[in-house]
Length: 269
Image 1 (cartoon, rainbow, N blue to C red):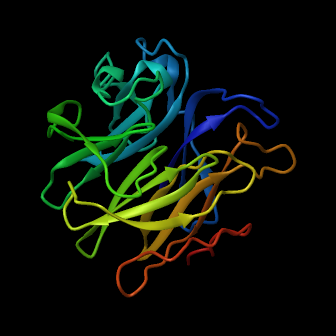
Image 2 (cartoon, rainbow, N blue to C red):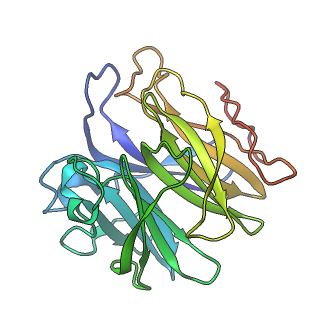
Image 3 (cartoon, one colour):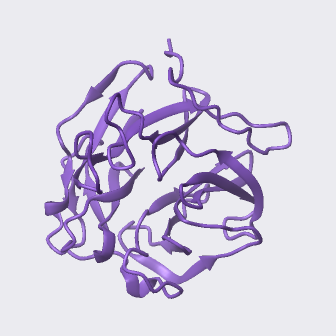
């Protein structure tokens, strides 16, 4: 398993200070290897904000694509031949900017990219703050293909951090809701909906106003990756740490609430 994270400055911070991204790998969820810093905000010459906000890495055809957000200067994409990098800016410009966020009027609307490749090979990108947007990606993974659309449904209180995954033919959209943030979710039979709200998946996570999840399957088991502010002793909303707990499904395909633990998950053997 490869884990890609943002990187807050060390504990005790009073604002968001993130200038690069990190990568770790594991074979057993207990012992982790930290690899050299694979990507920095300065690797994107157009990213005038200087902020290394949330990203998402996905593999396609032997290449690894890292979609990143830069606060108010847009979403970019870097590419590498190896999951540990080095990654390089694939476009030399943003893939998406605030101009693409047609229903938003605040400067940080174009953040939190999440990529999903469906069974038919079609890649999709989801993103947004305050409003949730999505679009097809071209097969080259670095161009938008067609119209940008917006997700909206009953009880959709969307803050940020969309993530899409698929299980047994059903699509799941998880996202941060409210502030401080909980993780809520909706389900659909098709990637473009209609989406049906299903409730809260993960309650407010410790000493952190934000949360940002990933849902992955590894060695036949499902996991919920997120963050809280419980670094001992100086964690906070601006000095966050990564957490992993079990993700479990009910018989009807709905999700059980995530039980947040201090210990995390068991070592795989």
